Structure formats: structure tokens, C-alpha cells
Amino acid sequence: MKKFFKTIGALAGLGVLAIVLIFALLPWMDRYGAMDEEINASYPGDELVPNPRITYTRAISIAATPEEIYPWIAQLGADKGGMYSYTWLEALVQCPQTNADRIHEEWQGLEVGDKVLMCPDENMPPAYIVAMIEENQIIVLGHKEKDDWVEVWQFNLVSQDDGMTRLVIRSRSAAEGWFWDAIRPGEFIMMRRMMLGIKERAEGMAAR
Image 1 (cartoon, rainbow, N blue to C red):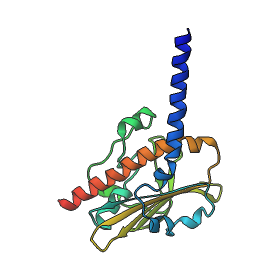
Image 2 (cartoon, rainbow, N blue to C red; image 1 turned 135 degrees about the vertical axis):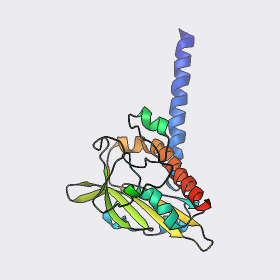
Image 3 (cartoon, helix red, strand yellow; image 1 turned 90 degrees about the horizontal axis):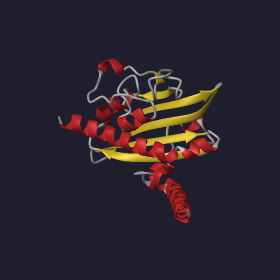
Image 4 (cartoon, rainbow, N blue to C red; image 1 turned 90 degrees about the vertical axis):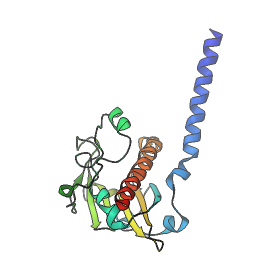
């Protein structure tokens, strides 16, 4: 029995240590790939949630033009091109979807007010709404409560002098409660895979 309790205690200790390490890494997760000037910059959509409780700015360099990257972002959605992330993990959380490996013209007419589904059931979780859009430059998605935006998800394409493009993704959320903090590490894992998925697809198209 003493050995049993020692094992339980060790497992509990490892669990606490894992949680501490994960949350210690949150500052790195929240600025993953982003340069100081990108973190300090203002982007379209910032003004929709002026006083966020949770925010991050993440970025990745892509060897493609904004025109070659934008279509992949425009067709994001569980009912369209998927999220370019881990399909096995999406299935595990009852959110199955298929990631597109080509541009679908029928999914390119994204407009302000359109819904972007995270799961096949648009209510679980609630679908994002397109708040702002400028072709080949920005797409801003968000959630509203009554008439106020309470969260935005900003995709910014910034051309570089060397021919590369920076995909800068920012999120600003006024959500309160422990749940939103608890899911942040998992959200980062999915987001990082999505960023890499967009990069791989856009660079593959550019090479062709």
C-alpha cells in the first residue's frame, strides 16, 4: 500500500510539474515566430477589441507571394478547406474535418458577415464571423456578444523586400474564466500546425 501511495504521489507531482512547465512556456507560445516589431505593430482589427484580456501575436515566413497565400486562408473552415492542422486531434475532440490540398474556386468568395466554421456543427464551438477583409492582405474573424466584438482572429500578409511574405496572426480576446486559459497550450499546438500547413501548401503552389 505504501508503494501504491508513493506511485500516486509521484504521478501527481509529475502532473503538477507538467502544468507548471506548460504555463511557463505561454509567453513563448504567445509570440511564436514573431519579431519585436510585429508584436508592437498595430494591425487591422485591433480596434474591435481594444482591451483584451488574452492576446498573442505569432508569425511565420513563407516563400510565396500574398496572392499565393491568401486563397488558402480564404477557404479555412470545417465545411470548406479545413484548418490545415492535426485531423486526428480534431477527430478526438469530435470535430472531424478534411484538409484541402488544392485551391477551390467555389470557396474563394469570402465576404464580411460570412461564417467560418471551426467544427461541422456551427454551434459547437460557435462559428467565427468575418469582420474585415482586404483581398491578398488581411482577413479578420471574430465573435460577438450582442453588438460588441469580444474576440478577433487576425490574419495579416506582409510582403518582404526579399520576396518572402510574413504571415502574422494575432488574437485578441476579452473572454473571462479559467477555461480559456486552460485550453491555450492545446490551441497553440493546433495553431502552429495550421501555420505550417498554410506555409507548406502555399510554397508548394509557388514552386509549381
